[in-house]
Image (cartoon, rainbow, N blue to C red; front, top):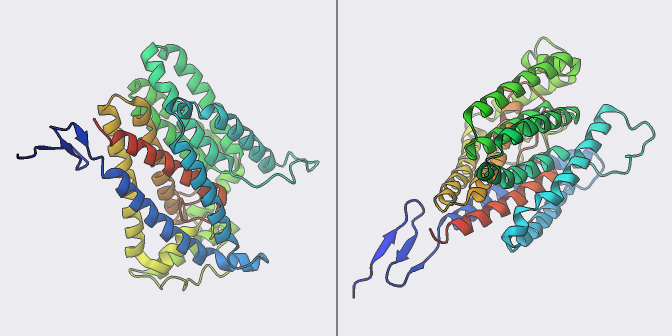
Length: 385
């Protein structure tokens, strides 16, 4: 007897109509392959960019690599737990993460502002609260927005979201990086657009935050000095302007094919924080334009798979996974793009760690957990219609 199969609309799923079974989606497997390649390339480039910094700080040459591996294993363990966590508990995960990340954000703001005069936080580990908070904010919006639309509480929810977002935007700015403030703003906008909120509210939300960003820049002398230093590095003499020129030199030295992995010159004590915030300079110098193009092709696949997962979730009526999958994939890919643009002085702000490639253990942990949640979303939405 001839077997009849039906091809799914976007992920090559084959369904046996007679047996009513489904083979599953290729998207989870493809996502695992892309993530594995990014992890592998990231560890190689992170070690290449960080071993000299490790030696200069008095550590073993593999210090930063070991830190990434440890945090990566912790992220993998946490992600595995989340994969098997019941859906109801997973949706309310932000109840636990959001307060902790908020406390961490306050600690960062206090340390950056120099308010800890008695050294109360001197033994506190150096963890970036902005990454954790933006991640937990996405989890919260993915849970809240669909329920708010179902209950019709928009008139009550909009002003609350605007006020809370305003306070958090300022708090992230006080934590030491306007780049993270931009990252937070775009992440919230993507979640709102994905949830199909009212266009006039999204427009007002965006306009309000852009105005606020301009105001914060104008009233902060340090922000203005940073912007002018990176916009006109040849005319403004400062540590930031020198770093910007060295990053541009490293990128241009890479050319089309690069100097080869491990052969970078500018990572040898010339560019500060090249193992973390400006790792893209080392990547461009060692593997060149074609190599960086390949890396961002993998990031494009990463985002593309998240986008299709969001489409499948919406076709199944799962708004939570629809918002979560597109938002998490955006967090990873946009942060990588933002890091590259800042390093190349296209965006004249301070540096930001690059997912998979920066030697920042805590940010690496957050990235691995985000990948685990994305894999769960793809596995769930790809099993059937």
